[in-house]
Length: 318
Image (cartoon, rainbow, N blue to C red; front, side):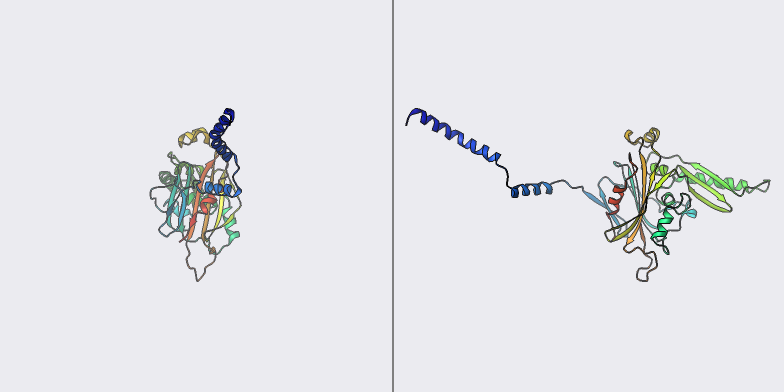
C-alpha cells in the first residue's frame, strides 16, 4: 500500500463521524416526529391563570389575576336614590376592578323585578329613553355606577331647601315644577371615573307633584339585546356605548395613560338565572333570585363586547 493511499484512509477516518453528524442534522424529520414536537410545543404554551371571586350564595366568576376586589360597600341603591330607583332588592353585591385594563366589574344577587314580562318587554324596557327611570342607563346609575355619596347628599339637601322655599306662605306664586341640578366632584378613582362617564351629576326634580332623582346622561348608543347561554345560565345582555371622547384634562385627573385621550367608555349590563329565565311564577321554582352583572371598560374603540362576553361566560352558579 503506497503512502498516498494510507494518508487518504487516515483522513477519511477523521472526517466520517463529522459528515455523518452533518447528514443527520440535515435529514428532515418524519411527519410523526414533527407532529409529536408540535404537540409538545402546544402543551407547554403558558395559559392565563384565573382566580375565583364568590358571593356567599355560591355565585362566582373566574377572572385573570389582574382583578382585585374593592372594599366592602353597602348594598345599592344609595338611600338618596332608593325612593326613585326601580323596585328591586339587592341581596349580595361585589365590586371588582382591574387597574391594568382600567375596567370595573359588578356582580350582584337580587330579587326578580321582571316577573310578568318576557324577552320582548325586557328589550323594550332597557332601550327606553335615558331618564325614564327603568332603562339601561337608569339601572347603571341607580345600582352600579352611582354618583359619589357626598354629591348625592349635597344635591338632596339643596333640593329640600329649594322645595321648602317654594312652599313658603309669603310666596305670591308657586311653580308646580322644581329642578335642582348638582354637578359632582369626582375623586381620581376608577369607580368615580365611570360614575362621571355615566352621569356627571344628579338631578332632583318635582313635576306635577311627582318627585324624581335621575342622572344627567350624555349621549349613548344602545346596541341590540343579546341572549347568552353559558354554564347552565341564561343571560340577557345589553350595551351602552359612550359617544363622548375623553379630553386630556379628564385623562390627567383620573391618572389614565396619555394614549387614552380620545377614548370612549363602554357600559354593559346583564341579568340571568339558571335556565330557564323565570319571567312567570313557577310553583317548582318560587322566588328565584337573579344574577346581575355590570361592566365598564374604556378604549380607543367604543366596543368592549368581546371582553364582557368572556367575563359573562366565566360566571358560575352552584
